[in-house]
Image (cartoon, rainbow, N blue to C red):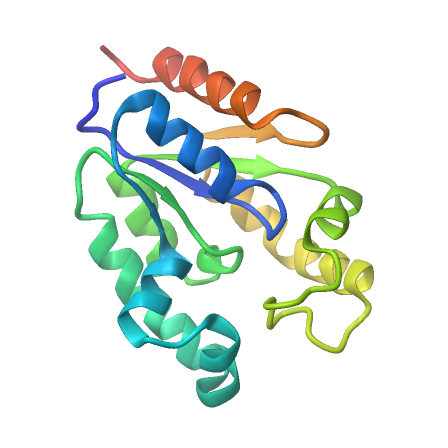
Length: 175
C-alpha cells in the first residue's frame, strides 16, 4: 500500500480500533493517531471530564474539529471514537481522505472489552450490555455506510486483523 494513503478505523468502543491501528501503523511504518487521545491532548482534559463540563454536544464539536484537521494529513492510520460517525461531516471527511475500515464486533465482545465502562461516558451509570445494544442499533448502519471495508474482530488476534486489513486495502486500491 502506498504510504500517502490513509487508513481510518471506525467502529464501536471495544472493537479494537486503537490496538489494530497501532499494529497497522507499525506494519506500514506510518504514524498512528487516535482522535480521542488528540482531543485530550489539546484540551488537557480527559474525555469523561469534557462530557461532564460540555455534554456530548460539546465533545462532538471538538471531535469534528479534530477529525477535520487529522483527515488533511497524509500517510497516517487514524482511530476514531465510537461516535465519530454520528456527524455527516465527519463521515464525508473520512471517506474523502482515505480508506475507512469498520471494525465490526459483537455486543458480547464489546462488553467484555469495556468491562465496567470506566472512562466511557456513554456507559456511565447504565447497564453496559443494554447501552451497547442501543448504541449499535443507531450506529451500525452509519459504520456500514461510511466504510469501504468491514472486518470482524471477535476472538481474533490484533496482528491477524491488521494483516487482513492490509491485504484487503491492497486489493481495493489501485497500485
